Image 1 (cartoon, rainbow, N blue to C red):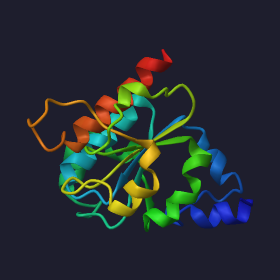
Image 2: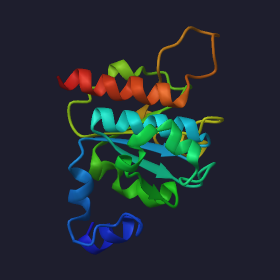
Image 3: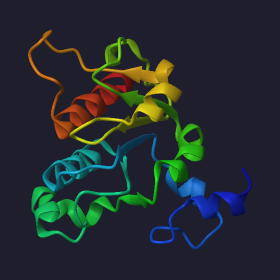
Image 4: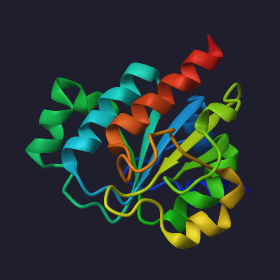
Length: 178
């Protein structure tokens, strides 16, 4: 990927003015990607978790709320201005960069492999879907070998809350790297 191609892939809203756009993003060894998040409180909480774990937050449109919504900021408390999420117009826009940013790991309740069975020692990209339906079928099918799930009691719940799942996964990355 050329530097010009890379610059086109980074949204103008957050695009660095220098040619080191990938280096800007690659300085983070942990990336959290929320694909089409729907609930502002979850996104605000995930933003706080990203700050606490040193992760870069990526939000993939369409969003179920406005980033200017006071409820997003309330959930992120006074930390929200420091979160500085990178906003992507679609999954297709961020997809070519995933492996450049790190090893992509896709979370899905239907995955048969546990997130505990993955080594997160190198740069890592944790990808999560929307609260109501998770990652879309096309993404799950394409990345079937990279799907993981959080263990849960059979028949207990459909899935774990998005912000809780992100926090659990991000801290597993940190635990393995300590």
